[in-house]
Image 1 (cartoon, rainbow, N blue to C red):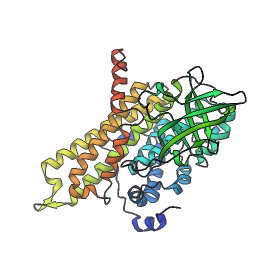
Image 2 (cartoon, helix red, strand yellow):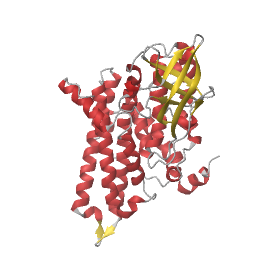
Image 3 (cartoon, rainbow, N blue to C red):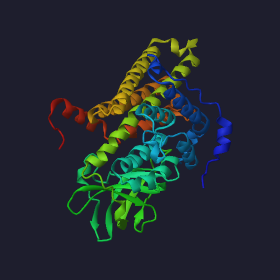
Image 4 (spheres, rainbow, N blue to C red):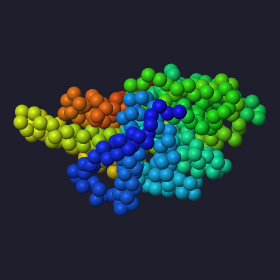
Length: 405
């Protein structure tokens, strides 16, 4: 039972979200009418359903479960996957725009959607059997089922190949043991796509359903970041997994890393949304805040901050747009995705910090979204490949030399 009266919050704060998108290079002209229509419909939904409640959710560290159905209705779950499985059948630019609009509100909400679409639905679509696809994907697309992705372990983050989670063939089922950590959606997920080693030491994917004996998902508390999303552990204590739940069409780390590429692409767009929100708020505040008899927007140092913000946002927009084209053409490389994720998240974090300074003391309050974005982005810059790991991916791509390990 939620401790938040969401309807009262929506009524009280309706219309408070005055966001206007910056588009300094007229990038909307590069988008199709369908792109803009979908983006604007998602933006309207966010302003109506999420913006009025998000600060309270973050303050109370509570995920708003009631929005799951709405996220399904706006196509936020697996929009880039084929319509034949009940998904959106849209292109990757549309997927990016949806993630941008969700993270413009909150990184935790975008995490919920991108985990569902890229880390749960995508591996089932890419590596699953037809039976698995038809069983799970339509319900996941609607939000009737929610999922999570089990890769990171307590002692194996950037080095997933060292994972200890394992399963054994028991004849009529598999026996799964181990633990995963820092798992978005874990506390309420109906299924988990879990990566574990078989007896030959090969990494395979398994679909683990809630209710299997020995499978528990303790929630992670005390977070200062992503407070409006649910994070937890996955614990497997002699869990019997039916053999038909093994993803048949992939073996090795290629499986989870392919999924991460899809998710990292979404993050690269999502971070632009967070940066836009910080910039928009800072620009508006600078015009309204009067000091020394004039708005602080009239002072050179504030103009420097704002000019640099819009420059970096514009560069990130162009990076995202071009990467979307490459994804749709099937030409995007993991290193190109790493560049966009690394650049855009770092860009957003720097903009959040500068925006906080423009807001002065008000920037640390829930009256404005700045500090919440800043705290969230501290997680985003680390998860699904840390800032430094993406640097090394790029380094290996351009030099041919492996600096890992």
